[in-house]
Structures are given as C-alpha cells and as structure tokens.
Length: 255
Image (cartoon, rainbow, N blue to C red; front, side, top):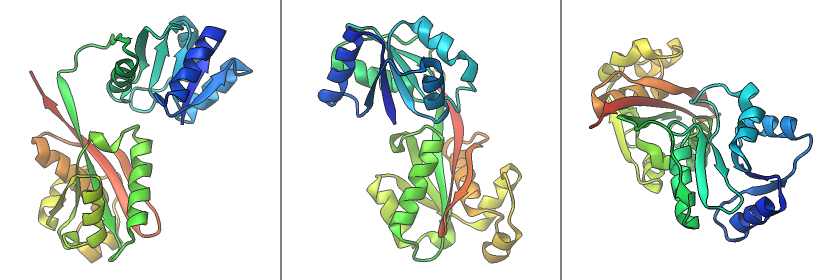
C-alpha cells in the first residue's frame, strides 16, 4: 500500500491531486492521529510512504523504527507546492530513487537524489520449483509475494530459473512469458555448485531431484551465471501448497 501523508491544507490539496490525477495509486492520510504511532506502524508493515512536509518531521518520526536499506520500505518527501521530490529512505535497494524519478517526471518537478552514485549494480534472479502441472495462479501469487518481501518489482528481475526436469513445466513457461522474463533451467550438477549458500537443506528433495532445494539453488546459480560473481539470497525459500520460490542477487561493477 502507498500512503500519502499530508499535515497542512496545501499539502492535502497536493495529496488529493496525486490520487485524483492517478499519478499515485495510493491512499491520502491527513493528519493521522496519534501521528507518530500511526506512521511507524504503517512503515513497519512495509507500506510505501510519501510525506508532504518538512524532512525533519519525517526523520524524527521514523528514526526509532529504521532497520536497514534491504528491509525498510521506500519513503519520499515532497514540498507543499510539488516542486521537489526527495527519495529519503531505501533509495537504491528499496527503489525510492526510481520511484522519485518517475513521480517527478509526472509532476514536472525536480528529483533531488542525495545518495552516492552507484557503481555496483545488482542483478536479481528468481528461482522456482513446483509440483508437476502446478496451476499458474499458485506460481504467480507466490512470485508476487516474494517480490513484495524484497521490496522489488518484476521489472527489476533479470530472469526466472529452475531445475532441468522443469524445462517443460507448462505454467512456469507461461509465467515467464507473462512477465516477459527469460526462463532458464539447470542440471543437478550445476546447481550443486551453490549448495553451500543454501539457507536450509531438504534430504527428501535431494532424494527426489538430486539437490537439497530447487528454488534457492536455481536462484543462486542463475545469479552466479549471470555475472560470474558470488551470489546471495535476499528472499529465502517461500512456499505454498504446490510451489517454492526464492530470490537471489549478484553484483556487477560498472564504470
């Protein structure tokens, strides 16, 4: 959920404009009370926040609940006239920088990015496993849940990966086509290369397919092959009744 928080009448007018003109698919929150508790609760739930007020108010309100740039949701700050958009929190990892650029473009406003220029670019890969003939909705719902946990959008994902026995899994293929992502499968010998990076191991899964976890192994190996650098899990294996999903990342140094 996106919450647009306004504290003054001019701020409320801007907030309503953002929603009415469909510039932001969000909910206007005017002077929520008790302010600090309400805002902190929304932040901890993972809501994306746009504040139309002074940055100092935002800093003092959220300071006690900040965790880290990988977990905190993105936070933008705007002035009452809508002339400036500032990505205050989770600029690179949480996507606030890109979000601020997009919004400022719609408003013809200035995007004030204060984070250092990123010379290290992350590449994100999805790993998925599933029962044979798993319904598409099970796969899609799980994938979107994992993206939400990582504060990522599908546009930030490079590719979707699985084990070679799933190369003909119809709905994994359809899922990849729906989101316009390359679908790649890997043999068990390749996936075992990242065995030491798994968050958990299933002896049962190993007895069936030859690796200790399909989703994590596929995500990690895919990220490793994409850039040739050591990958890491950013979302450990998540599952529903018919599928598993994990997200990994590797980094590429760029000039």
